[in-house]
Structure formats: C-alpha cells, structure tokens
Length: 389
Image 1: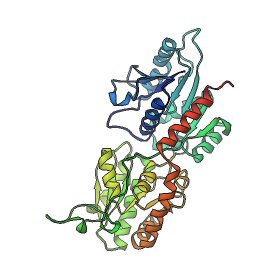
Image 2: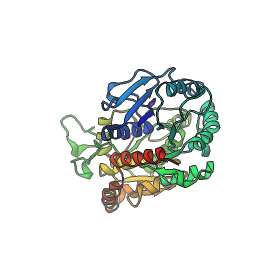
Image 3: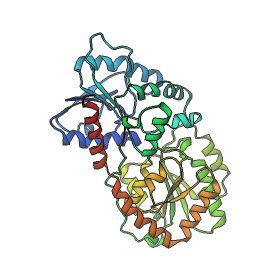
Image 4: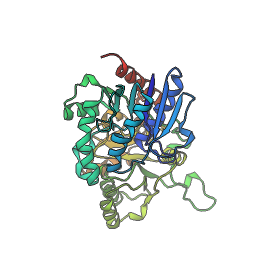
C-alpha cells in the first residue's frame, strides 16, 4: 500500500500540537510497517530528521501553504497533480485538510482519505480566529468531514462534537488520543524544593522560588488573560514568593493579554519565556509547583499529560476534553471564572495532601496515554479506511 501523508506541519524546532501528533505517530507507524510505502508531502524544504525510515519518499509540493489562499491552491491545485503522478492508495491528513474536487485530472485513480480533525474550536469560538482563516475553516471543514472515508480525532469529546456539528455517523469516527514526549519525567528534587533557581550566588535548590506554570501557544482560547487576573488575585490573597511562568509563543489576538498584564499589581512575578525547546520545557515542567492549564476549549490538552509524567499536580478546566484527559488526577476549575481559577491556585498551594493525591492519581491516569498507543490506534484507523466498504 502507498500512503500519501500531508506533512506540511513537520517544521523543525516549530512543532505545535498537531505537528507533534504527526511526528510521533508517523515516526512509529513508518518503522513498524516496512511492508508499506509512505509518500511524505512537504510544502517547503524539509529536515532529514523527519525521514524516519527507508520506506518514506519525501516530495516537496509548492507553494508554501501558510495563508488561506495558499491553503486552497496547495490542496486543490498542487496536490491533485501529485496524486495523479504517484497514484496513492490512501491519503492521510493529520491536520484535517483534504483535497476536494478542483484540479483533479480526468481518469485519475481513486483513493481513500483519512482526515485527523483535532477539534472544532473555530465553530464554537469563530471570533478567536483571524478573519480569513475563520472563513476558510467554516467553509471547507464541513466538506472535509463529509468527503473523508474515515475521521480520527483526539478525544471522545471531539468525536461527539464532530458527529453533532457535521451530522457524521459516530461509526465513521475513531478516537486516537494524544501522548506525551518521553523526555517528560519526574524531577529528582522533592516537591517542596522545586522551583526557579534564582537564589543568591552560591545558593542551591533549597532557595528556589516556587512557580505555577502554563504551557501553550498564546492565542485567545488558551485563556491566558484570565489566568493572569487569577494569579494577581492569588497574590493579593496569599503572601508568598510564588511566580507564574508563561511558556509559549505569541500567536494572534494577544492584545487582551498585554492589557491585563499591564494592569497587574504583581506583574513582576510573571515571567514570559516565549517558545522553548523540548529539553527546556521538560526542565521547567518537572520543577513546577503546579501546572495551571485553563483554556476554555481543547481537543485534548497535551500539557496535562506532560505534567502527569513529571509528577506535577494539575489545575485544569472543567469543560470540553479536559476532564476526560485529566480523570481524577487534576483539580478542575471554571475557565470563565477568575475567582474559580484563583481558588484552585489557593487550594493547591495550601493543601499538601491534595497535591500528593493528585500526583498519585496522575501516575495511574497517564498510563492510558502514550504515543505508542496513538500510533497503534491511528494504524488501526488506516486499516479500517483502506478496508473494502
């Protein structure tokens, strides 16, 4: 079987959630199935790090598709020519985009399509998405969902959401959970000694300053503005050295974050790191007092799982997929309530028994998720897609 794969989000040192899903699952699938051939379709020069095995043939398909007009051209004009040339048996698209009808040569061999649609944030909160991208998603994703022979998604929540929104039978949708990078492991430092190494010269971890941690791209749905407000209220309520670290790259519509930050009483206790490499993310996660990850919409929420693998207590949201991923291993709060987030911080800060219990629960909950399991489930989904109807 020849499987063509949309790998345009495999960008060296720039992997986000969907990019990590693509990287971790395809790295395993291609190695585990040498009997099949894979055609990796990049939209620009690629890193050899992404050519995982000898059964992968990389092809650069222009133009680079980083704008809605170019998305359309790449999927509706460029890809059909590639499909006509190589005649794949199946097209796997880890970001959910498919090629519809425009640009298909007459007499072209038919192939199956498997779309991985991670979530429908743009249907629930269209105002959070830049205008042209929003219009594109809302116009084309209903068509992608209907065209796909099968759909994979990353949570039961998203499965039901896709089924409901697009009137797709649940039987056509498979849940393929995300995993966590194996570098995320518990710190050897006792919980009370974790923190920022900002003690005076010659100091050690006993003088480290504790911190709450948020990891994620700075976009509206990540709810960073309310997190900042809640942290400010936490500091007003509780005299402590606690810091808040925001680790992630600015994406779009971040004016509200800047406005709230500038009004904070304790803004000097907030540290924005920008994008960090995976090794730095692991260190900053493993030494956190608690992860505070409170988006108001997620298809999965990988940082929740990364924190569990680091034995770090989790505060997360009580909406969409996050209770599903967290199970009984997180303190759930209302992401739309600054007071609820603040109260969660206070409770985690004051209650050592709760922190220890959440860590123990996390050690059990995390066993449900791994990239190995992701790859196995995605491969089963590929087999279902290719099976005769």
